[in-house]
Image (tube, rainbow, N blue to C red; front, side, top):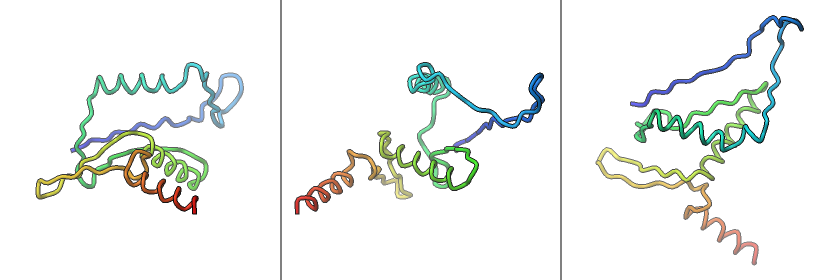
Length: 130
């Protein structure tokens, strides 16, 4: 069984002590400090403290992502992009286990190193040379 917990930070409508009532927040980041290595360090710390399971039953969540936007279409496009990039760029393999106790390894066809991707590139090259 996999347990999933989430947390959502909601912007509160606080009364500012000088400027009035809050209507929103604008975020900025100091890019030299808030970079990918900071996120990797945080992920490493989380994995050390709470090792993760690799077994996911049918019907349970394999990936959870959340993106907020003013309009549903924008967040749906962003989620689709994130999932596509995750599949294409992160080397994750999955072994599909069957009720017969047999199993087979599956690859993400989106990965540039997958056999499916190699065949697509070869087909494109052949079509371009014709």
